[in-house]
Image (tube, rainbow, N blue to C red):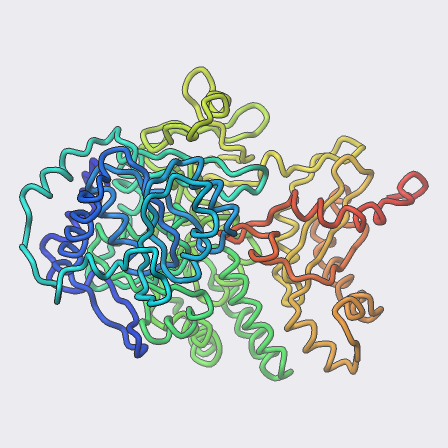
Length: 597
């Protein structure tokens, strides 16, 4: 289904028109899922927009949102956009000083936060910003210097069915008007405020999900941070299709939400799929019989890849048996009703995609950037090509530069970086092509393959270029590996730092009778080192000689968003890792001059 959206306000009106059923689901204080209807959505957005207008918020003013995923996030977003104002979504996991920098840079006048903890974060740095009012979604008696969000809501969701003046103001917003400033997660440097117009995002929404026949029968759990363009884009698309969105504010609540909501659409970043796979392998590894059954079932699935990739159910009797006994349990981990699995936000990795395909789950990988609103390409139901990110959207032009970098052009490409005219100018060539920073190739059928980040490519002292991400993805396929970073730029050979999947490693160590008093002692144990060397050796067997990992360092730390090695979208901050473990890396190459590599 193609849409004819001009602005994001068209998304709001589409969600509120001709649908008496639920458009959202939210868990109440008792833990029960409660529906929010289209009429309730309209009334709440209308009411909050009226309050914002009374406070002087109007066209072009910036309003920040610092919150986990919840219905109030969407209501705030739509209310701000309806006034022609600009929202500035911030990750709930940011530190106070990070929030201060983004609020000051954006010049936000008002911020809506989720909780007392988020309020305290803002209150601590408020004098560094232009914030005039703080609105808190939770009713928190201890917070006295803020406005409770609930005060602006209509009592019992009553109110006018439609307000002509409110609607006219929303329709007066133009496609070229700025809609949002989204600060990038900063994997390679400082965060930049990406300016996206209403028309940028609307143009992308018009075609990005047109191949999917989603409708009111569908439900999707919104758990990826809405401050990330991928999650926000998905929710907008679901509103347009008439599907129901169930909000899950905490990642650790996702397994429970999947059991209760039983979604029909699942959208995750690669790390989510990797964690599911590792958990399946961990549980199977607790029993030799279970492990053997899993391997047998996956071998049956491997023979049926063409059928599963085509979206059809295999006819093989042995596959049906494998599915009934083993594979269906993996699918039930997602709730048992998912018909569409999508991955975006980072490279999925051919190994992970293949494993899930063998398990009967076709993950349709897509690709895009915050600067492109975000979708550039997406695998649809047919055709779908393993390892690719699909064919480029119909309204996005792509070309490959002589050095392999992907360049894109089209109506969904961003307006520029906020307060950074020089950086903006350097991001485009004279013909308006945007430099994505990704190395890519197009096959004969027009499918796009992303091989690595241009800035992440390693070049050995022998002049060989090595793409680290595919190697790292292979390593992370093993249940023992939490994360991995390939290092060795300008050296004779490449090596790897591995952050273990500590729950799996510690369980394995107990089974082996390894007693240690600390993680540092654990990763230094010869048996542990040998186990990880076997993982590296298996990956090395698939690589060209110049790509093979010659040395290994197992670190005693888990890399997380909180500790700073991962972005909020779970991408690796390579420069942070290299800086934090500079001494370990130096030891890997201490004898480089005399080593054979």
